[in-house]
Length: 376
Image 1 (cartoon, rainbow, N blue to C red):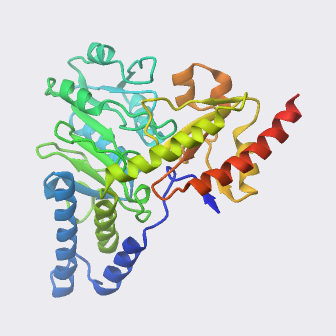
Image 2 (cartoon, rainbow, N blue to C red):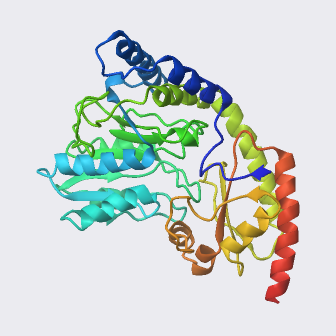
């Protein structure tokens, strides 16, 4: 099997899984219970929380555990909008956002909020001057992902955060699902940040929303006591401890892992450039963990399933996207409908080997020649 869909989800790290199993067996008490078993479980959560805080250089009280990035994004956007609607009803975002950003924004747009889409420059990066021009007295939230989930474009988050700091009435939310564990982004001027364990070799079903101290949210889930007042429900001890370990392992040797993936990505690109109908959509501002390409004239699902016959796995768009075959991200970047209708995403990791890329290229060459020949 050749797995090239790491941006959709990563395989669980053995150490993370072992940690989850061990803690789940040993600490059976409800962390909210007052007896010894509850206290012991709660102590494990506190240890995990303190470790995450240290790794991200934040305060333990700024960590909210969720079921994953989709919930974190919804809590950030809806939570801010509801809590601070007395300040205004204006939100700014980009055309490159994940469906878990677009979904709540569409909901808010239908319920009295105004959503503006910032312009992008020719490289797909946020037009800083246009962003400034969109900010007004009623702006309460700017939500911009750090890395697009289809093309891998990395936005200048530090620069944007520094600019938005000058507007104390608004909050800056960053979806870092596709960047955490891959590149380093300081959180100094970021108010809210989302990420999920299953993108960093952790388990599905656990994520975090980092909410800086002094910011309030209206919860999505109301109910009993939990680790914070912003998300009710019995804390999942094993999952919380597992995301702490997954994050620690993911942040180890970032430069070494990045350079390995960059080398693999360059090798893949050079070999794909020789095909007449292949267009590389990812550009120099994309992180090397993703390579988005269009094979003109071939439907993405046709290519995907043909590769699957050779046990090679890639994806079309983001795994959480709607069923439409047109990639809005590719269309926004290239303004080319044919490329947007024929794009696929190859996503790499530090686990990806040159041998796997050679396996992919051999299969791709066979499929490409068969399918393109059928077009002529």
